[in-house]
Image (tube, rainbow, N blue to C red; front, top):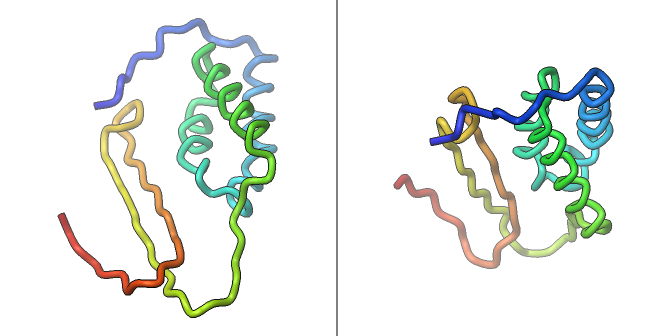
Length: 117
């Protein structure tokens, strides 16, 4: 279960603007280039209007990741591989019992199959 309590100090108006600017500037990148960060940006985005020191720390960690892997992304090449997808959803893993979903789409030389567990 997610920890619903963020008792870190709230940010002032300038800090909230900073968090909103970070989320806004990275949103296109995570949708078009590096979709591994979609869940992270979504979680931070839900908290940006009432951002705290913890929210700013999460933004800084995300910026550190982006600076560490500047050439990360998705490359598509024509081949005889099969497109496969894996999705993962969870409930109550985010604050205030929000649902969360993520997906990985990849190429495989073997045929993918669907299974429910």
